[in-house]
Amino acid sequence: MLKLILGNKAYSSWSMRGWLALKASELEFEELVVPLYDSGWNERREGDEFAPSSGKVPLLWHDDLVVWDSMAIIEYCADLTEVIRFWPEDIAARAMARSMAAEMHSGFAALRRECPMNVRRNVPRPDLSRDTIADINRILVLWAQARARHGGSGPFLFGDWTAVDMMYAPVVTRFLTYSIPVPPFARQYMSDVLRHPHVAAWIEAAQDEPWVIEQYEGDHGTA
Image (tube, rainbow, N blue to C red):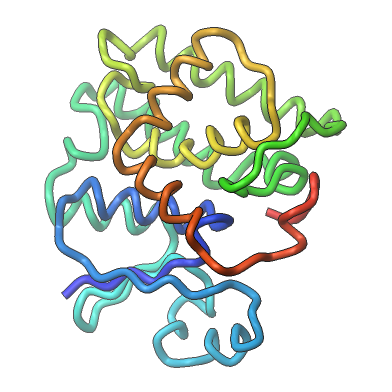
């Protein structure tokens, strides 16, 4: 039995990435959405079910085995199924895709801080810091390079839907939420990501959540 523990779908970008990985695996799994930072959050995150990740989400249980962190969940799903579901077959494309995913995993702190994920909002573009603008420009360069080198005839960064698209899907939602101007190729890519059935299903489910985190409802906040 696979059980994926998630944070709010409206706000939790890392949970979104882990969930997209499970959906791509086509394995059956149970999902448990836990509201972040509610009155029971501190007590809940100290329980045995959350102990391996120190209370962070997403968290994947597979019987008695536990995997935490979105990148680890992606790789575990690849181990359970087949690598080609998650990474390009060509070795050069796969190396670039993994590098881009790793940069998303460890970088872009300014964008995370100033433009927290909120798939239920669309606001005028806020005044962004130089660091956030640099993050946005770096992401657009990476997208352009991936499309030019390895996009082929498919709509996604490396043609087919892969783990790197799953890693950048929350960025797509951020660009939409905060009305970030992007060049035409990026607008088309974003449109294709938002139309992907797994992404569309996540965003649709988020609309019905009853929880609101006020710090994520302003134009700025902590990602």
